[in-house]
Amino acid sequence: MSPPQAWMPTLPTPSWSSCRSTKSHIKYTCLPLQAIINISKKGKTVIFSIHQPRYSIFRQFDHLTLMNKGEIIYAGAADKAIIYFEDLGYKCEPFNNPADFFLDVTNGTIRPHKSSNNISEKCSSSEEMVDNENPLAVMYRKSPYFTKLKDRLTEISDGLDPEVTKGDKIGYATPFYYQLLLVSGRTIRNILRNPQTSYAQLFLNIFFGILVGLIYYQIPHTLPEALQNRTGAFFFLVINMVFGNLSAVELFVSERELFIHENSSGFYRTSAYFLSKVFADLIPNRILPVFIFSAIPYFMMGLKPEVEAFFLYCVTMSMVSLSAVSLAFLVSASVGSFAMANILIALPYVFMMVFGGFLVNLNSMLSGLSWLKWASIFRYGYNALAINELKDQVFTDNLTRVTGDMYLDHQEIDRSAWGFWENQVALAGIMFVCLILAYVQLCRINRWK
Image 1 (spheres, helix red, strand yellow):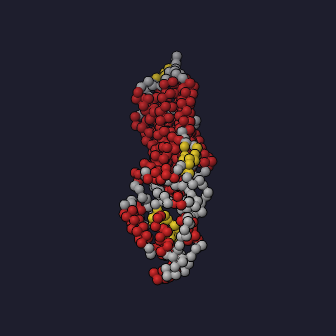
Image 2 (cartoon, one colour):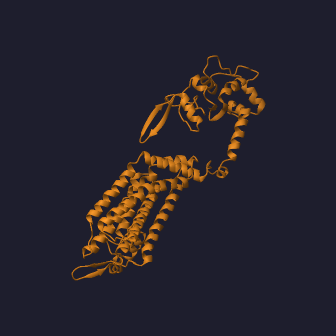
Image 3 (cartoon, rainbow, N blue to C red):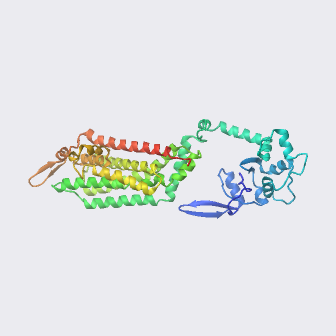
């Protein structure tokens, strides 16, 4: 158990308190000293602040590190510290608390007693003193305690990740997969402790799924409702999938300061943090709710009762959701303000909706603006849903017979097998480009302000 620096000024906190976070509340539980020692011996790290510990607490310390003016003046066994300073000429009076004695030594309140072992003489005999150099630190560097500590650190560094020794770059003491495992575990625990977002995402998907199903309940095959209601439902579904991912803009903004602190301190790689957050957010909040949302309105609207058609429908909805949330990740990684993130994510969503092919005929637009349709998540999602549902369908009324293929040709939508998967590839491309740019933005964050 490594002792806290009791001789350094700290906030007055309870001597035996440990902070434990339970869900969204912080509970302070007073534990006996022996319980804390037992926890540390089981391989757990115990961090607590203590001010001027009494002797019964101090004697439990295994290792002691003393610092003065930013330099180490002793680091070694706690029970050898008094002997070390007595060899330098300092005397711990009877009944004096060792912690108070070390404070007096570091503050210069007491002086060495033995003139023959005077610390200044030892310093001058061992090496030439530099102006304003701390004599206590000089003596420690000449002691066997320092040699032992240096050898121990050398042994530890030999087993570190090779990146640790790469010049002046940040080194990592653990491999990538270990960092990814720990950071992912922490992210999952945070989600489990604060499940409100996941519950809200699931509830909203169920609610809107039922709402869409009721609005477009059992769409008939008679004109004009057959085409009008189906195309309207497709665009409404895509809108819900895209704007339902606005909550993703908070992912990196909320932990920006924590990420900067831990990443700049060399705790983990940017890639490990990025992948852990992406995977932990996508699976519980973006993928599972999408399948629930997709299944509810599909059967309520009475779309194609074919397994293949339903599967392709779910694939399309998932790709729309993933591409939209990837764009939200990019915005979240690029700004440090939640308000600014909301503004920046709304602009591309609205432009994509306008150039989605449903609100306006893209062929009638100015040539200087029509190219924006190639970056529209709405367009690719809408086209894929239309191809999957309308292809080979026949809609009639008393006088007219219209096929879904005729409507697709009129809208210049490629209804071939490649035409459907072309939209999926485009959505996947948008997703990967946005994720790569989001990772680049995380790497570009200024960590040394």
